[in-house]
Amino acid sequence: MLNLLAVGASDTGVNPWVALAYLVAGVCFILALRGLSSPATSRAGNRYGMIGMTIAVVTTLITHDIASLPEIGIAIAIGGTIGFVIARKIAMTAMPQLVAAFHSLVGLAAVLVAGAAYANPGAFGILVSHIDPTGLETLVISPVSRIEMALGAAIGAITFSGSVIAFLKLNGNMSGAPIMLPMRHVINLGTLVAIIVLTALFAMTDPAPEWMFGTILVLAFVIGFLLIIPIGGADMPVVVSMLNSYSGWAAAAMGFTLHNTAMIITGALVGASGAILSYIMCRAMNRSFISVIAGGFGAEDTGGGDGAVKIDRPWKRGSAEDAAFMMSQAEQVIIIPGYGMAVAQAQHVLREMGDLLKEKGVTVKYAIHPVAGRMPGHMNVLLAEANVPYDEVFELEDINGEFAQTDVAFVIGANDVVNPAAKTDKSSPIFGMPVFDVGKAKQVFFIKRSMGGVGYAGVDNDVFYMDQTMMLLSDAKKMVEEINKSLVD
Image 1 (tube, rainbow, N blue to C red):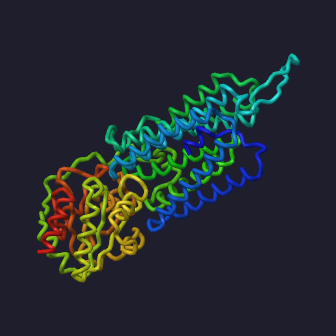
Image 2 (spheres, rainbow, N blue to C red):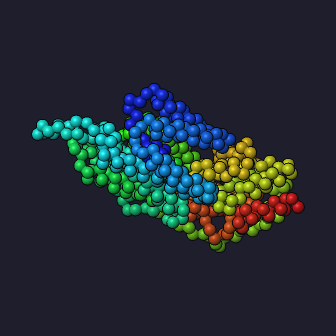
Image 3 (cartoon, rainbow, N blue to C red):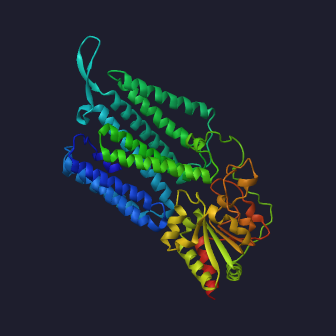
């Protein structure tokens, strides 16, 4: 999408072969989304996406007199090299931050293209004749193009500033707790109304003054910041998906400005799929979709999540030998992975543990919460990387009813997604979020580094102190390696 934003130009009047190429690219993008809907077909989906983008970019480059091809080639080489190096070096734990950073670049690209179109409309073919009150005929940007330009720039600016805040929260440079500003709802609504009004004035005023376009951009950058800071860590996967949707709509809006069919198709697909995914995740979390996209609209200003840990409650410490013995004697073990597993890079040894248990006749299943980790599908990707069989991986609604008949629930690096406070504590920031009923299992083993920490939402967990829970305090990878050793011995 970034490439199309950079090289997109008008394809008005193109020959049928160009239209056909863009159609094929659009079909590839649809197949990519279809493939990415399941871990089993995700690699094929990625390949379709790359093929479609290659067709779209190459078609745009060879059919439009937009710039020097050597210059574009150098730019692509530089950008491609940077992307390749980052992709090779980035750890899976930092993937959510990387996605947020890339979303910010898409938004910034939309802003830059809109700025270029406004500064040099003749090069973009968006000028029309206008006769002023004195009868003088001049060329101005067409009203329709001004609407498209303003919307694309505004959505792009919101995506950029919002993604920067998401990156800072995910990367730990900024608190993951909700930051509630006084009268934030009034400020947000007023800013959005101002952007809409200015966009309408920008479209109706000939010639459109520069201060209007600049003010729209400034307000959009500000609202992107204001929309994301009130959203807490528990909702961050929804934010990542939502920003992905914003980036798509920004690209689609600029596609209309540039009259580039491929950009319109790609942006609309990304925008629609991101919005649908955000809605699905909000339903899975019992969150209001409107409240999340409105920047925590309806969230409580006070309540739980202050990070206070109840240190005076009794809890039981277990060992790798305890876990190995209990799980080897079980009929069924359900493993619940979370972000801590990603941090420790324990997915491979976890899969080895599952294989060892299956050799002993134990049924092993993996329970994946829709918002486990810091982005949609984070745990699915890690387990797929470790070659965990897809038929052993279950979503929350498919497996939650099995905990009452399960011998052992093995929680590795998860916290908020198994916290009963989501059902019992109305003051908790995660209240209303569906969670795994691990407390119904006969035995719970809970891996975490220490008792001094809390989950990303900053809430203590009653599961730590249940009679059937044994805390395995250690690095997740190291603990599972010790369990595997005990299972072999």
